Length: 225
Image (cartoon, rainbow, N blue to C red; front, side, top):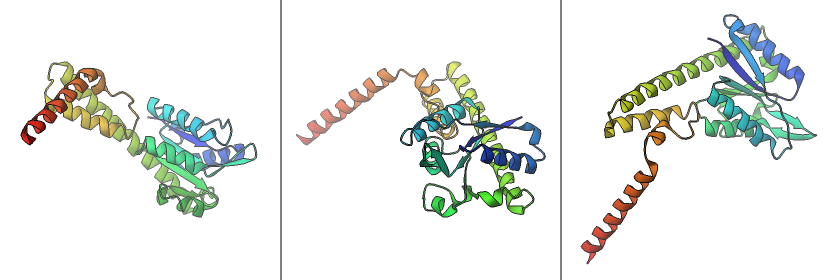
């Protein structure tokens, strides 16, 4: 099984350094690793949204399994903080493995939404013979593998539950189990409209809820009088 690591950095030299560091210290998986570099286009005001949209699309389709983001991104002499991209991706896909690469870790530590163990010091990361670099690469691979296995397991579980539904078991318990699995899977892979929503007549469900609310209001009014 191969893995693809997404890279967000505008400097070609930095991108080469990241690839070389990971390939060098990922000896067992070197031949199974690929990288995807994201084009950084647009203005300072639009870059974060544009890149985040592309990243989330790739996460959903399974095109990337991890993401490394440089803290300082230069766009037309303006600086975009990579932590903004980290924040938006993490909000949409909480379980997706992210790494912030920086020369100034203090700037990342002050962001309370960035996990401290996801902040890697760039100059130490590039020292391929050092223990720091080897340990961080090991963590990237381990987190990526754990994410992929968990996502696959939840997807398989959901498929089995939906098969039960299509075979005629439309019990409340079945729907609740599907809803629970979809809620968990959504943290690994944004589902958009869930399979449960596709199977249910949402309009009819909303109508039933409205009727129930009206009945409760009428009952409350009668009891009050």
